[in-house]
Image 1 (cartoon, rainbow, N blue to C red):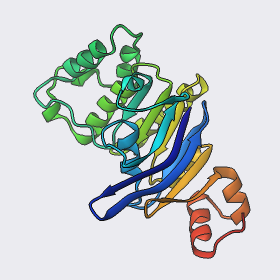
Image 2 (cartoon, one colour):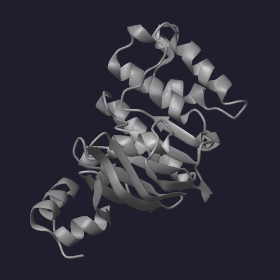
Image 3 (cartoon, one colour):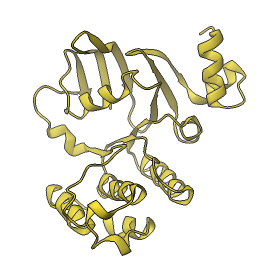
Image 4 (spheres, rainbow, N blue to C red):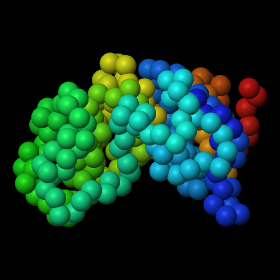
Length: 237
């Protein structure tokens, strides 16, 4: 589904990504984790075409990405902080994204019901709470059924019930064939959802492992504990 080959990016003298290579198989949920400043956000922006890489190649479904961005039609994106036109209503934003979709089948009605957004449809975006904005982002990311879902801290700002609904939705879309790239600092969330974890440090991949296998090899009580054991003591791979 995704292949990243020797990706590099610098901001002036600061190296954000250094020779990063990995692939994500179709139908998998792969988590990208790491501390702030480790390169996660830059990676996502490059995949989405929002930032230009300095070197390297990216392939999606074996198609090399150059200067075109038609591949983004295959991608659903849920940002950590959604920025939508403040003067539009929720209904107008959803309608705008639906029109951009160009006639693709949409599922916004059932999502609006599921995340209880009905009462907010006629409110302007600028009046919404952070959690309600995140629910709007969920509608926009999942209203189409995409081959690839890029979810950046998807449960940020959500109450526990809504977070549970979102995690159920992620699993459902994955079971229907969507590949998921999950960026999260909540290791319990990663443990619950992801098949594999790719852990970044200082713009490089520190390790990549199947979530269950990492816990078993480190004898950790959970994923967060296992990562701490791995980083502090090292584990022979």
